[in-house]
Structures are given as C-alpha cells and as structure tokens.
Image (tube, rainbow, N blue to C red; front, side, top):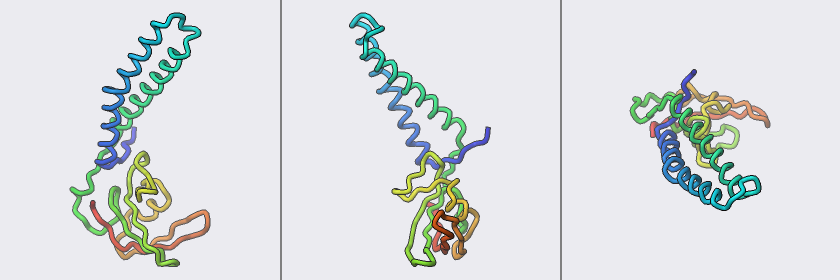
Length: 158
C-alpha cells in the first residue's frame, strides 16, 4: 500500500476526531441502544433501528480514520530546510499574470483540502503544476475556462 502524505495538523485533526468518536460518541450510541431495547419488541422499534444505524456509521468512520492514519506519511514542513522549492506542505503565494491578483495556497493531503481556507489537495491540477517549481518560476494551470498563468512569488514553510 502506498503511503498518503498528510500534514501534522491534518493528522492531529483526525486523531482528535477518532478520540471523540471512541470516548464520547460510541458510548452514547451504546447507551441509546440499551435504552431502546428496554422498550420491548425490536422489530417495530424505530429508536433501536436508528441507534443501530448510528452505530454502524460511527464504527465505519472509526475504521476509516484508523486506516488513513495507518497508511499516512506525516510530513512536518517546518522541519525541512527552506529552499524556495514548492513541496508538499509549503504555503505558496502566486500572482495571476493576467489579472495581477495574488492568491495563497497551502499544499495538503486529499482529506485536508479546503479551498475556502486556502488549502488545496496535492493531487489538484494547480498543486501538480506548482510541485517542484521555485520562487520566480512561471506556471501554467490547465483550467476548464482555459489556461491560467501564475508566477510563484514566495514559498513558505509554515
């Protein structure tokens, strides 16, 4: 199995969610199932079926998170010597050469991506165009609306 890159912050968020699911959510669901069983006939007990469905979802999510953490390669970009090269985890500031608008993105793992927070997936077209380039390099991103040219202004290890 190929390891999946993940930032330290992304791994911490997954661990926190895992802890919450195991220590808070799972016990609440078990309690709800026990309470619903006390109401009698399980065939027509909507509370019981709802609680079992919640349990199934919770256990599935726990297994998914454990699998992601086990197959991840956690990369702490702050411990890597800055060279001006775009690598996984770096925060890149770019200038759109057509509009002269400045955009800033951090390259993160697929599960951590959130464009509204400036975090883009390492497998996204813009990240793939940036990877391996240096400050001052120009890149072309193939977008649905046509090619967009950027100049990499700065690469930070935050």
